[in-house]
Length: 138
Image (spheres, rainbow, N blue to C red):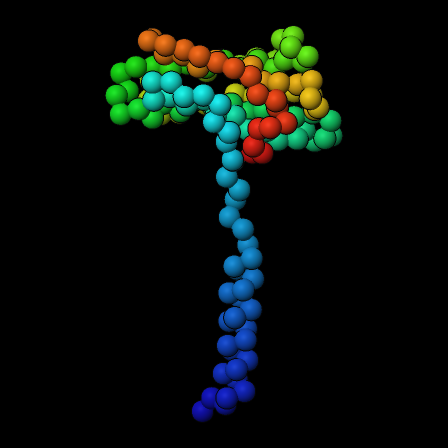
């Protein structure tokens, strides 16, 4: 026969085990900032601090999610400092459907650093710039 004390202990152990399991977080998903859309394609970017904390690593990708995947989209990002392009650039190549591999560029921190970008398709294109500090964290 099981005593009520044994049942209470088993319930407490089970609750503790479930509680600890509930505190274990799933792997973090990157929070992407959408920079531009064109013909069903979307340019997205996010940032993560470098190991020494002195700079940002900016990741960029293109998602072409339009139902008509016969058209391609492509993107380019360039890190600028005080309005002048640096050697940190990435191009996606043509993305006909799905998602490109993420590319990475390095940027300094502070208001002098921006990410210039363009997103184009066979029919149209556009671009702009965003402060690197305003990007979502990966």
